[in-house]
Length: 260
Ligand code: B12
Image (cartoon, rainbow, N blue to C red; front, top):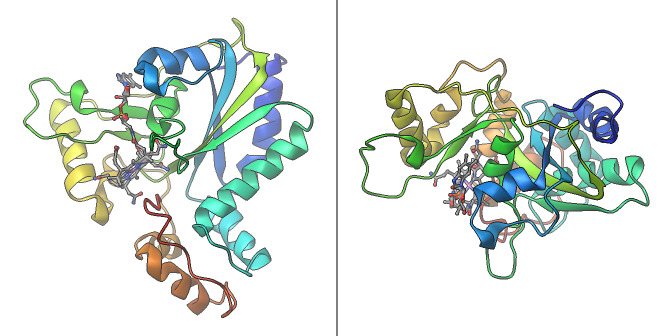
């Protein structure tokens, strides 16, 4: 939480003005909060007080940003269309609001040459107070002897969101005005947490992990149809819906993760 009229508050207000209407949420944090949780190989190379912002896409993004983006850029491209749309929205917002400032942008799908993600989206969402990151290690006396991936749950949206980008404002050092807020722990019992990780790891395709709490909003039917379609077949769906011209190129297999 930042106090009104601080430099941090100015950054967040400008970003929200551009990105909220497009179906994104933004949450500030200090790089030090993030680095403190991670092993050194994942650290972000900035001083501890540097202002960072994690950007989430929420259900409305599909209708407010993605469909209009397709209509305007229906010539097609080589990357995942959702990733292209996110990059377009975020770079436009940064260029409009912070021209001349040094803002480093990393996307959830970007990897370093050593194949490590540019940033760990779930840790960022947790330390920023956006969505609680439930990990295997949080469960006492856990029933599994295999690795179970952790999952973030948003207090209002359950699992109906994605963590899209990290912005680092190199020149903005946040002081005492930015205080860390703990994310809301909405999956409290051991049994519920086990159920959550089972759903996320063993049955993620059915999407029921997203409903581990009753969300205020879910993806629209059209958005579900899009994400529930295999990445290689999405282009055909978009053409069928009339959002792409028949000349549009196929999405690459390169978009291997294709996270919704
Ligand atoms: C690689 C990847 C995959 C891989 C491997 C999964 C994995 N988690 O490693 C595969 C392809 C399997 C995959 C699949 C899916 N993924 Co995926 N994936 C990623 C990606 C790109 C990187 C994850 C990663 O490599 N982490 C590295 C490991 C080492 O991190 P870690 O386990 O968190 O370990 C760190 C923490 O434990 C931390 N730590 C230690 N102690 C503490 C304490 C605290 C309090 C905190 C906060 C942290 C912390 O330190 C460790 C590192 O030192 C992220 C996006 C991103 N850039 O982060 C999405 C992401 C995790 N995936 C996501 C999703 C949704 C999926 C899928 C459902 C696919 C889909 N339809 O979208 C499936 C389901 C998962 C499954 N059942 O397998 C979402 C999760 C959203 C959420 N609500 O949490 C993400 C965040 C993408 C997004 N855009 O939102 N994914």
